[in-house]
Length: 205
Image 1 (cartoon, helix red, strand yellow):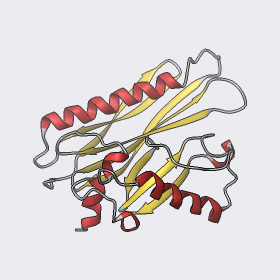
Image 2: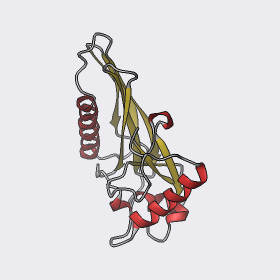
Image 3: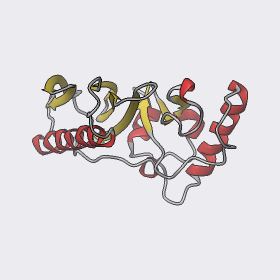
Image 4: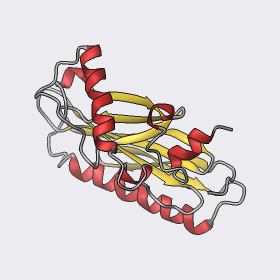
């Protein structure tokens, strides 16, 4: 994975009835590949649409929707970010959804969780054990006894860590909000795919 400059991230504002969305738009930094930039922007736009659709209709007179984002990593050809969408559609409180995306900025490839690790590695078991220990240590009251993460568990990369997280109600009651489990790349060193995004973080500067 050849290293290039960070991507340039700008904010585009889209306003619809009852809806305001702040959407990231990336452009090339340094020797960025124009096709990679196009792919990344298309993936982001598709996920913003999905989040909006998953919230359901804004038929309630009091309904509103807000969308925003946070860049988690933008270095060493690793671009990882989270998209958020809050909507109030009636009821006791609104609902916030989060969707994270991790890319190779030089190619536009979007990574799944399994693609961060060596083929055949037991990444699900390893991560699940770490998460289970953290749940116990933090005294998190889960809705059901925790057994395992899913193969497609939500994640992003930040500060040389893999951050596993659970959506509202996925693991525990609404009051807990999003529940995050940062795992240092050094703790996963034996199973990390060396030429993947975590491998780049592991390699240091």
